[in-house]
Image 1 (cartoon, one colour):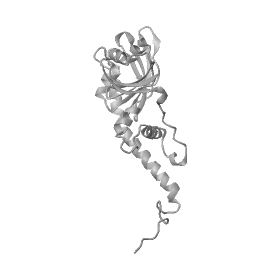
Image 2: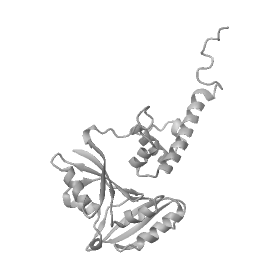
Image 3: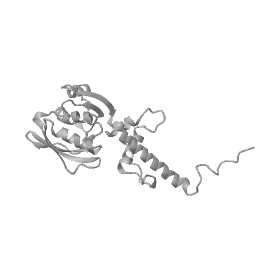
Image 4: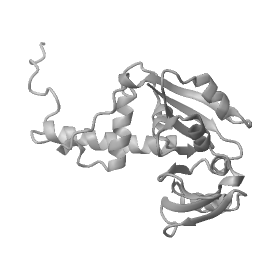
Length: 244
């Protein structure tokens, strides 16, 4: 079995179309679609500047296929959950196409800048080219981002809950662990912040801020642990006196 990640610009999909106009807002599906008849429900999570989230919700609510889009709490700060009802007769989603093809997919799809990020799982008999052609139907744009054997994937190891990491938030730990896993810190790897952002489905500015803060916290904790108590820097007192 292979794990395949696809970046899809879903034309006509209300989330993608609205996302294009609000690139600072990241959309994440946090529940599966439920319902019967033509109306289907789910919950989505939006992250970004408050004003941009408010505008996103208003535009999304006005889309033809959207019956209802109501925040589950007042929009404040940079995060909100929204209960959504869509008219299945007026909207053909990527999820529906994958289901018709009998393709397994990972829950929690993210959308940023109009690009939906889907991770699917293909059996040896599945034709990736045929899957992409089906998803491209109707003018959608599909880019293959990743295609690897599932057995060869090494998931990011959980960062140990040691004192060095005590100053990190859960999100900072997640971003740092992902950066390590994709080779961001490997010399000459060519992996940049954009690659880490793509892996997480977050904006590059958001990822950069998380990495910057987590790096600062980790380095300060390392210094305090190994050298702070002696007041000496690494290696001081261990070198021979200079000649001359």
